[in-house]
Length: 246
Image 1 (cartoon, rainbow, N blue to C red):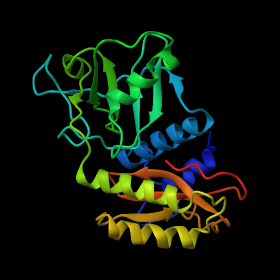
Image 2 (spheres, rainbow, N blue to C red):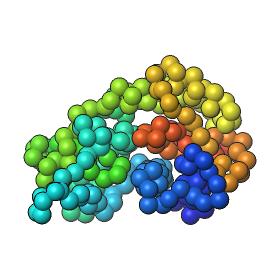
Image 3 (cartoon, one colour):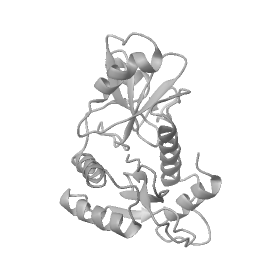
């Protein structure tokens, strides 16, 4: 798990005008960053992770006893296309990697279900976008009614931008497949070219430790991807070890 100091530096770097104080920890941007950092760290320790169920955020409606929610972008798309949650039995859920350009969320969970949960795969699985700040993809046992039951919307697939981001991720993995150290300037330059190639307008790569003006390390990797803010945060990679791409 990343230390509190590192998390604090990441919050500072999310501020477009960083100063002496970090980004408001209660802000949506801060919540997204912390959630993704923790998920990335868990995924690097284990290929899949069994975790406690998470209760979706509920927003009270205009009248008492009525609820409304905004799931993802409100149009059936996730705000984090790099991972999904397979909602399993009572013992917990499984967080798995996801590529919206190549994967179907239901197929991903179906393929790994027995291994993750030790139970037969349910006859029906349904992919939804939950109403958390991360707007995550969650695959529930059961039919399409499961989305509304969990205050979520049916997942309708990736956006054009998310498909471009998927191609960028695949390109980076292929281009640097045999590298164990990629200098920050080199990775930023390549990513800038790929942003243009795949139509990712407004995107930038940013070193998450520069909020307090720390120097960049000798090697870089991708720490996390903040899709709503269109920022890819670069971390300091340990030279000589495999690079883990999201």
